[in-house]
Length: 96
Image (cartoon, rainbow, N blue to C red):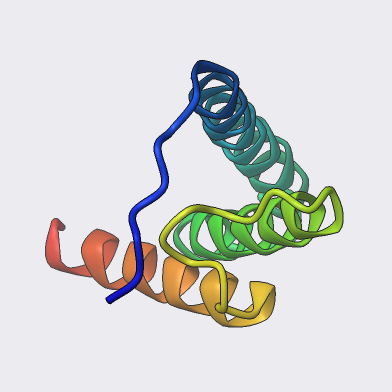
């Protein structure tokens, strides 16, 4: 059986930093993309696409920085973005 590693304070701090950075980046990009896409698309679709794009860009960027999300290390950024956008689309449709 594999031995569990101890988490050092520096490792925890780095993971927390990239978690907060990724969360802020997703929020910022979602708002930016929604405002841009909102000029050309209905709001319902602009929000779904904006969230999907924001998640995909954030996953790609964090993967390029060698700090992928903790539980989603093997998920392709486009798949994550597609699932996030689809989830927002379904949630907005059901919450009408």
